Amino acid sequence: MHFSTFLVAATALCATSVSGSCFNTGQNWGDHEVAKAQLAIACKDLGGTYTPSEVRQRCRNKPTGGESYNFKIENHTGRNIQVSQDECEREIGAQIDNCGHGGE
Image 1 (cartoon, helix red, strand yellow):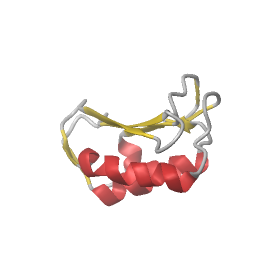
Image 2 (spheres, one colour):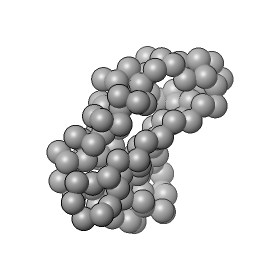
Image 3 (cartoon, rainbow, N blue to C red):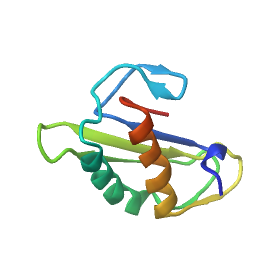
């Protein structure tokens, strides 16, 4: 299963402006390890079977600062897909590492 067949969105602290697949504005992720720790918790709920057009998202509070992370997966394939917890963490984790403000 390749994540390129459906949309993975990882929003860093409520970023709002999109360009290409990464947001250009909004809060930075900050410490990537903190963001990835919250992602690991969110991916426990985000893994599983997705029906066509299904969207799941989980909001996780940042341990300090009163901010939050919003992690989202959308199925745009037109068929059921299976997303494992490991895939969720790997693919959204790549956005944490490669998109300073999150992305979709």
